[in-house]
Length: 199
Image (tube, rainbow, N blue to C red; front, side, top):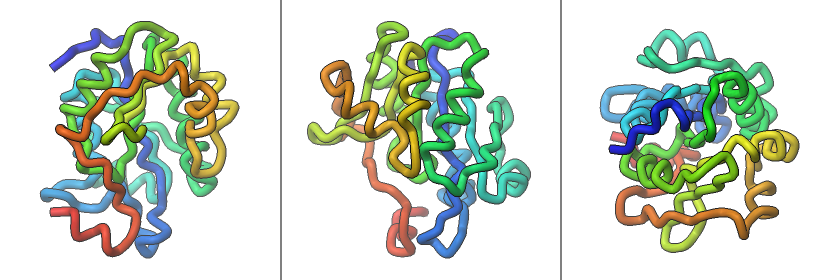
């Protein structure tokens, strides 16, 4: 696996309240005997990211208590109910003084994306101006790497549940797509029906 010597931080967005799952925070859903947030943090580390910052929100204390997040920086988003955009802003802000050159963003509700996909995106990093995204059969998905030169622009445009979508669309020509369909599945755990994908 690639190791980035602290140049690329993992940023895990894990604050959502699971509105369509009856108010069960996605971070605490169990997969292979452990909370989803643990699996995702481990994928970031194993894929070559360090440090790893985890943004929590819904039932934050319970997430801290139940999930094994030793070695991660856990950041609380008090405005988590506003959507993913606010968590992305909080996460990027938490990285501002960390001395890293890029943030690789993962979502907690995508357990089909593991260390192999993370490592491929890490390998696409060139400098602070890098924008690298996983693609699945040519369609952009997660994880996504943002060089630090883009953080201010992303934070300014991130709102609601759109996250960095508007920023990426505006900078489409600068985004390097890295095909990951052979090593990952980009499904989300959003609804009761999706819970069948968890083991």
